[in-house]
Length: 182
Image (tube, rainbow, N blue to C red; front, side):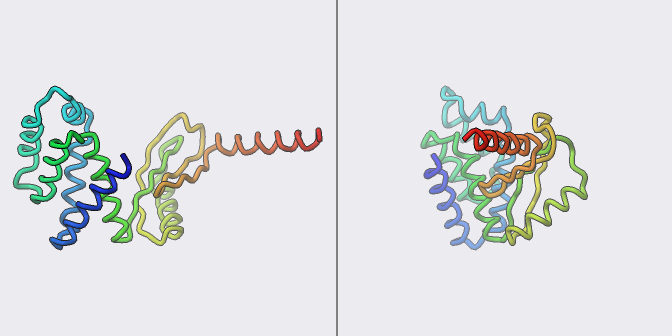
């Protein structure tokens, strides 16, 4: 599935480049993705017994006169090829590729409790320095994190949670006990 996602995203990017409309297409792709990623819309698109014509009609009503022909064509193609489940992942990859081209990336920060704007700004600056890119930070609160936070950035995870530190400490203690027994 990742290969298909990459292939579709690359094809969209090539069309945007050929038409000289990368920045406009980025905005439109974000609009389409955000419109289509809702649970109700996804349930409709993934329903096998709903005819393709009804899905194309949804796209037409939601996006006609708002998005360029090649993005509408992409949506129709995905329905025709029965790949509705790939629409949002392809758009995510397409958006990520354009953003990387512009020196931008998104970091997902998951913390035990809400972070202050100051904390978010510090995380943004550290990640920007580390990646040499402009970093947008999306923060999510997850009470299961116990304490601290972790960051997901470009397929990498930076774990600063209490659970992670406790696991590291436990492993060190286990190694120490094992070494003493030997």
